[in-house]
Length: 343
Image 1 (tube, helix red, strand yellow):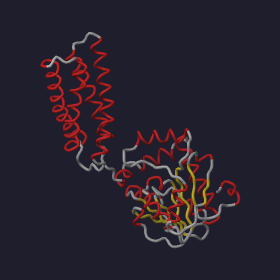
Image 2 (tube, rainbow, N blue to C red; image 1 turned 45 degrees about the vertical axis):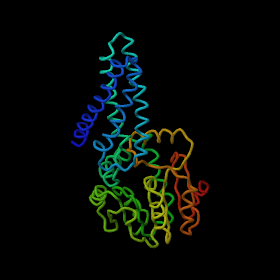
Image 3 (spheres, rainbow, N blue to C red; image 1 turned 30 degrees about the horizontal axis):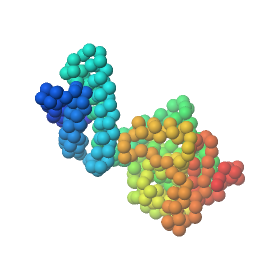
């Protein structure tokens, strides 16, 4: 419904912008005798200025946090593309013997639809509330990655779970485990089976926590809804997270690292690497996730700097080809079978 209302608002703004555009076009062609193409492009600039001002302050105003300069840059990019699209389409149509005014009408309708889609998704993208984002996505995402047949998208994530358990195995017996960003708690029972005496999972999404409580009924296993900055001190527990760091700001990552400082910790992250797999993932992220809330890629030097800021030693780093550009960081020595893969 909200998108329908927005489309209606955008249509009203487009009508105002088009009126400005057509008025300028008509004056230039009829009153001043300017060339058709030059008149079109000048009129397009005038209509674009009207569109930017009205859309920013009315159509896409609610919750917009990108700022005028960023909105302006993105709008210029869109209108640069739209400018070329309109010029190319108009030239193509008029060269095919279509009169100037019908050609302009077709050009404007095409640009109208393209511009709305790009403005909504990119130029005036609204701030994303992480809790709402994960409430609407987490269960379907987990099912697609862990429940179906293994594919390219899921293989590294399944390997990540198995490798995490292998790395943690010597440290689990008799230890409390705290998982941050636990989702629906898919690792909980496996950690208990490997010797942990208790497990407590924290997740931002109440949808994920409700699913976890429904499917993991064990007195040793508990779940809470909380962002990382609301998780209480964990003492000497073993603190873990798989993929959570990719969605956090630096201050939140520092909080996660501090939670395990009195015990052990293991976290996975996406590492900055020049690889075809990461390039594909970056392109996918651009298309699949809204601006302002996308997974990030980290340098180990950045993690070490956050640790140093808390007086903690550098992280131990574990890499494995099955993780592709993923890596584990930890504050403990690896099991002997894995030691050759650690920094």
